[in-house]
Amino acid sequence: MTRPQPELRIAIDSAGLRRRIDELALISEAPPPVVTRVLFSEADLRGRDYVRRAAREAGLAVREDAVGNLFARWEGSEPGLPAVGSGSHTDAIPNAGRYDGVVGVLGAFEALAALKRAGFAPRRSLEVVMFTAEEPTRFGLGCLGSRLMAGSIPVEKALALRDSEGRSLDELRGTAGYAGPLESVRLPPGHYHAFVELHIEQGPILEAEGIPIGIVTHIAGPSSYRVTLHGEGGHAGAVLMPVRHDALLAGAEIALAVERAAKTSGSPDTVGTVGVLRIEPGAVNSVPFRAYLEIDLRDARLDTRAKALAEIRSSADEACARRGVTMEFEEINEDPPAAGDAATVAIAEKVCAGLGLRSQRMVSRAYHDSLFMSRVSPTTMIFIPCRNGWSHRPEEYASPEHIASGAEVLAHTLAALST
Ligand code: GLV
Ligand code: MN
Ligand code: MN
Image (cartoon, rainbow, N blue to C red):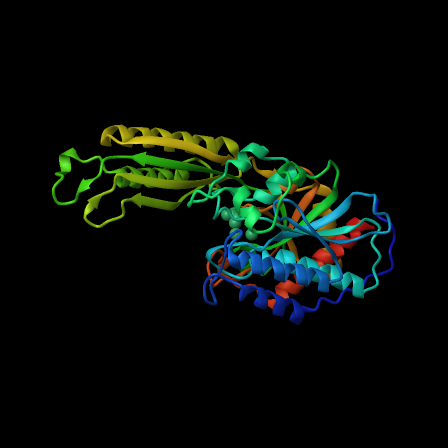
């Protein structure tokens, strides 16, 4: 139930928001314009400092949980009611840009600051979350913080995670200053009344259609797998071709099988990628005795994703048998798609209409922390255009005007939900 309100005059400080996005981009493991902020790296820790400061400057009270999810809260007049949440992530994959996730964190701070300047008084508390490790770079598993918040990953599975150097989540969160039982990260039931994440589209549709706002009705379901191949090494000059058991070549066949299976699944939404491939010993004059691959497979539908997976597995079995290579094929995650909440989508649409901004309903092909927030709260996302649909690369770009429009829509939507 929303109560009547005096008309809200929101003025987003577009220049200030832009400046903060640019400042955070300078906190990176690589020189500009590249942004790399891998979970619990030195850059991620400095980024977290920046975010804490920005939250306090927006007049919000900060707390952090045992895995480093950061909550910046504006207490409502009825603080016992479920809060209205927003937020995203600030970790960045290697060689990324400055907008993915960041717009949803710093944009939400600015939305709340603008609501404060407008004299708005929320009934429900407003809470911005900076989620830990939306990106899978360190542990191979995306949305670690929101998964734990939603209770979508058993704590034992999180504790068993290891990075490529064998370091555990416990060890790394400890060095970052986070302690306490991971069970405590799980949100109490009904913590959020609604959750709205602002994000760049990471696709070309809004820009191509000249529409400033997308409202997300569905998020495609991601899955990922780790494949370890054991062959036989040897001298690249001395081991003749008929007797080789080359682990890399089995991996290469699997990568091609991923492409083939995704293209022939029967759904235009099936996408498959091998984004990680490591070989040992990695010497030009040595036959690879081990290969390690990570497969990312996504779809808006579960049946076509399952069909593609079955085809990948049978091609992999066949290639390994033929080549005399043994294989371990492990699931990292298999997440179902998520549906946005119809009432929350309708509120965001009404806000756009009221502001004279064209909007369009869309499916998110990328995953987001909203995939997990949607399991514990009515959820939607607000998308803004990004140049050429580019993301996960340094050329990623969203215009200050589009970012400000997104923050304005977010501010009004949060206001409507918190009243
Ligand atoms: C999130 O970054 C994704 O890979 O969709
Ligand atoms: Mn990303
Ligand atoms: Mn993102």
